[in-house]
Amino acid sequence: MRKRMMLLVGVMAVMGVALLGGAALGGQPVSFQATLSGANEVPPVMTAGMGMATVSFDVPMGVATYRLEVRGVEGITQAHIHCAPSGANGPVAVFLAGGIAGPGVIVDGVWTKEGTFTAANLLATACGTIFEAFITSVAAGNTYVNVHTSARPAGEVRGQLVPGPQP
Image (cartoon, rainbow, N blue to C red):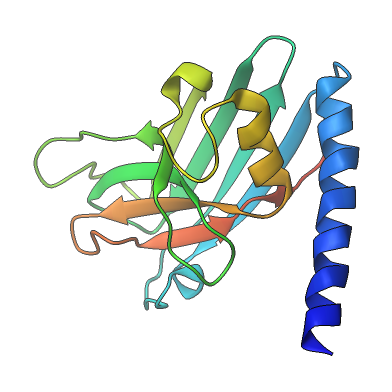
């Protein structure tokens, strides 16, 4: 029974990837979003922090655009997209913010980061270093956004990337 359920989930994931990947590869940008909280960390952490991340892929242009907004967190040191399904920890796939010296970014309640990345920014992970392969991993639910702090180096707030409103 369990094998049958896993097969069904796998087939549904492949169908979803085909639909989303087809939209992206057909020239239409495709967007994903993540709701960030300490409860999504593995293991969960108690924090007042929360946030939202959006990532939009434009395959013909070979670029991804992202926006992070985090509230109630101080001492941010790094932010990444990691490669792993929900409930698991995985390697960093791409840096969104990093190398912040000292105790991190200290802000009055809100930290916002916007930027872009390309295949050249992807790290060698299970998600792949080819732009389309990375998008397939995202569409399959195998990536998450994680914001790290000086108080919680393993991660303060996290959220799985899921299909979001399309541009």
